Image (tube, rainbow, N blue to C red; front, top):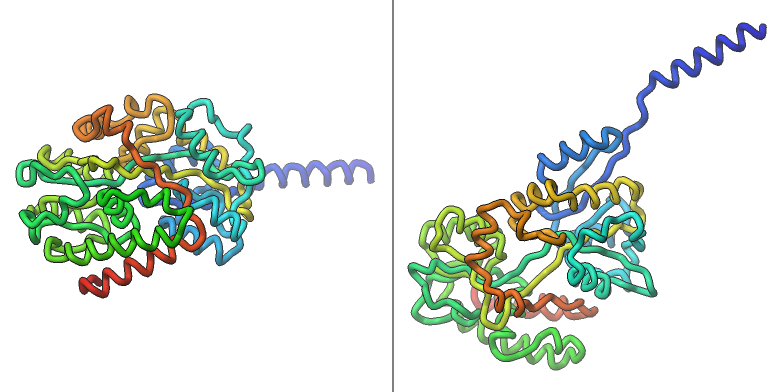
Length: 358
C-alpha cells in the first residue's frame, strides 16, 4: 500500500512537470509604432512565459477605454505627460508606480523629473518618461524657404499650398504666435476662452491657404512628397522620415518654440501583469532596444545619450532641424485642467463649421 501511494505521488509529480506553465499576457495600450514586431518578438524570446498583446491608440482613446473599464483591460498604457494628473484625480484609472522596479538611472534627469512633477499625486508617482518629441512646422525649403512661424501657414504667398491638423496643437501653436501664453492662461479659463476665440478667428480666416486638413501622417506625407503643399503643421517624426527621402523637406521649430510632448509609461489601476509591465519598461530602455524603437517611432527616447542611439538617418534629420537655441526654446505641454479640452473641442468644431472641414 505504501509502495502504491509513493508511485502515485511520483506519477502525479511527473505529470505536473510535463504541463507547461501558463503564459502570462502583457496587454499594451500604446501608440502606433511604439511596439514594433522586432521588439515584441525579442521581448518574448527573452521572457518566453510572457505573451505581448498590443492595442494601438491615442491619448483621447486611451482615456476613454480606461474610463469605461475603471482602469481594467490593459496592463501598461502610454499617455502623454500632460494627460495624466487631472484624469487620475477625476477617474482614478492608474495605479502608483513602484520606482524601485524601474531602471530610472538610465533616464535623462530633466525628463524624469519633469514627468514625476507632472504626475505626482499625494506623494505617489504615476508615470515615467519613454519617448519624447515635438510638434511644429515642416517645410520644403526649396519652395518655401522663409517658413519660420506658425502664422506663416497663413501667409498669402502660400495660398492653397499649406496644411494643418485640426487638433489642439494648432490652437496652442497659433496662440503663441499671436503673442499669448495659453499654458499660463489655464489658471484663468475666461482668459483662455478669449485666446481660443482669437485663434479661431485667425484659423477661419486662414482657410483659403489650406490645400487640406491632414488627419494622419500618411496623408500629410503624400501631400508633401507630391508637392501639393509646401509647408504644414506636423509632428517632428513625420518630417524626419520625409527628410530621409528628400533633404529639402525639413522640420522647422517655430520661432516661438516647438511644442514638446513626452509619452510615458503608466500602469492601469486594474492591470493584472505588473511584473511583466516593469519588465517591458526596462527592456525598451536598453540601448540596443532604444535604437530599434526610435527607428520605428522616429522620436527620441528619454534615456541619457538618446541622440547617439538614434539611427543615422534620424540623427541627421534632427541635426538639420534643431540648433541648440531651438532645443532650449521648447514649450513643454502643461497639465490640462478639467474643462480645457471641452473648450478646445468646441473651438475646433466652430472652425470646422466655418471652413467646411470634415
